[in-house]
Length: 165
Image 1 (cartoon, rainbow, N blue to C red):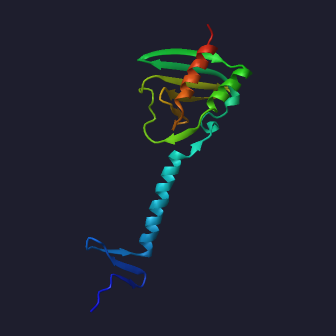
Image 2: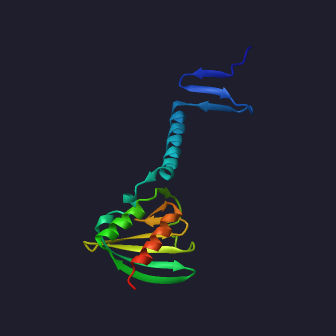
Image 3: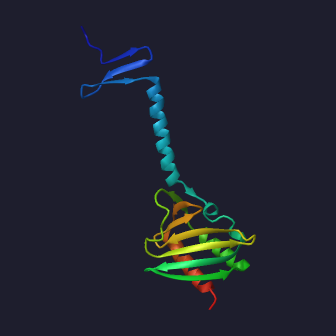
């Protein structure tokens, strides 16, 4: 009698694995495998597809002033600046100059070396915070993003030129 390697028994497909085991595939398990693959691609897309700078720094054209702390080697320097219209355009060009990719993990980036802790005060007296460190990691609206390290350098240089003497 000849043994069948694959057989169809109603909705069930039975086969013999290379190691001698038997695997059973039902329509339900196929749907489960497809669901797992779709979820895996979703997680990949979440981290790989860049988001706009407007998502990271919302209402950039309504910022009235910036209060910021500069952390470096355990020392904190606090300062604030009031923005003029041309300052808003410069800030927007710095923020929009890079792509932002979402990241998983801890939202605490303040202990990773140098960091800027920015509080943007809007014209309607609302505010929001954004942290960025020298590695290009950004936390804004309780979400973590990765951007180019140059954004940190440009922001720090720009804030130092704008702060009052």
